[in-house]
Image (cartoon, rainbow, N blue to C red; front, top):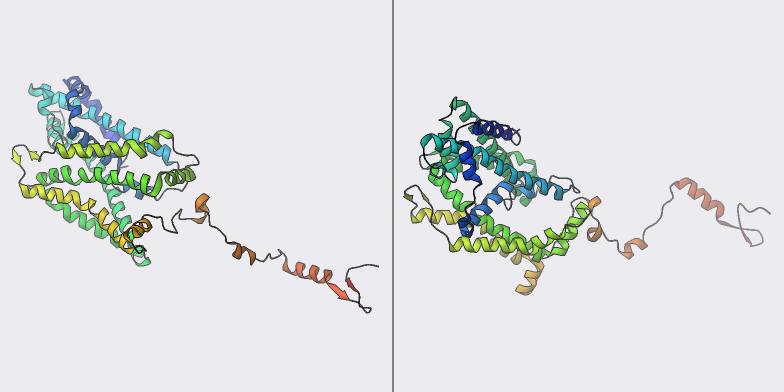
Length: 395
């Protein structure tokens, strides 16, 4: 319901929006490209953050949800469908938004660029203000904010499950597995308490601070590290064989090239140019103080710093006399690495039987009693003259 009903609300708002005066002006503004922005690194950084957020890349949610799939689920097909649906939904939502903003600009007698806001202000300031100009405005406002609530709940379901699954799987003992409900409650309460400051008068300032720092730099850095770790430390050949084992066919050449070269390079350059063209954030005429900017960078580093800390921990726990040996052992897959179920372990994950074990194997007959009677009948019997013959011999 939380995934499908927002499309119904979007369609209702779109049908209402395109019937208003000035809607086509807003849509034309939406579809007109501004080519000078293509060289702005902030635009590319914002686009990357938007894709990471909408698709869930580098958040952990995709890995969490995929862990509940069947082993041979066609994730290649799912990824294509989800990516196209996500892009189409974003474009469709743009038509809904700018048709209403075009009406608002026409009503106020100003250009669309004057009423079009960016960031949270578009959803919580500009668009609600435009809805107040419509007939039966409470109805449209209720539909719009009900849609936002459903979208927020759908996002929270995924984020909450990601945190809970990470905690339970990392601890991994029976005690915490039996108390997963309490872990879920604890994560939910902690998230609620951390979200309380966003409901105060200064909430919009904290929201913008989190939006610009907590989920921008860190996502780009984590995704770049993931590409490098999987392709060059775990090994692209191993990764492609794993995918072929699950899907039944190797990943297409286009994806292999993207994963190995294009994606890490694009993400790296986006990160570099975002840092070069960095500008402190502001809200209207308010300039954020230095201590607020410092908090923003700490939020961004809080998730990234876990990677080197855990890497140092694994290197220290690995065997080896020198640092290089410890590093090599830390970057090797564990002995039990592979599919969780034995029935799915094939190829290089297939269990190997040693010759010594096979030499001690004894073949048991399907019918033990019949086997013993046949063996007794076929056993040699010592005759009175010292000759040996079978019991069933007939002379």
